[in-house]
Image (cartoon, rainbow, N blue to C red):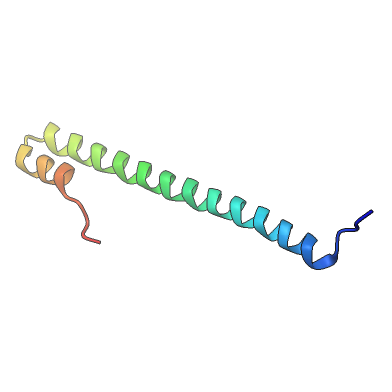
Length: 66
């Protein structure tokens, strides 16, 4: 019968933690992207309601340079 050593148990748990951490990071980035998209849509709607159609178009078309 083989017993699990401390180092192999640690490696397994670290891999699980890595997967969980990456999942949280992906979820966080998705939430931030959704919030940014929603904010842009609301700003464009407000501008369009005030008759500033060109500005509303620019708000929706603007992409931050990475």
